[in-house]
Image (cartoon, helix red, strand yellow):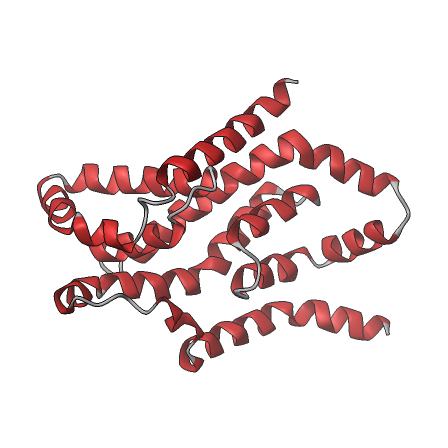
Length: 229
């Protein structure tokens, strides 16, 4: 039962977090606390960085609402750089935590069951494992799967922790930079009384290069499948 305890804690924290914070972690909260956050950052930069990073890690690790807001806040408070690096690093650490918790609680046993079988699920699993890096990078680069889903699927397939960590960092970096960039311009948005355009990532000049990177990451897998056909 001990191995299920961390997973139970994460699930309970996620439920409580969504219930208590769901209506409070939004763009308007950032607008309302703008001056307070800037004043704290200017007076206590080291603490601001530490608390921001810990908060972002908690949001991802416990699957709390406010992931996009956290990324915007990183850009708003710390600029494009180091804001983007802080955002991506914190998101990766949080993703590693939830991955490790799920793998310890359920993933290892499920992976063993898949390996012991001989059906369609095992064949799909074997294909993914044979192309782990392209698949992991593709999941991160393509804005299709929710971040939480992309965090837990590899845990069910027995992906190595180190490989999961670096592909997460690299894969989320382009999108992280885009949203940090939006956050860095929030001051002007606030001054105009407007709301930031979070759909900017789907603009052709933004999504095009990201899709190209995803296609490049998936190319080795496509090449292997083509050779087997």
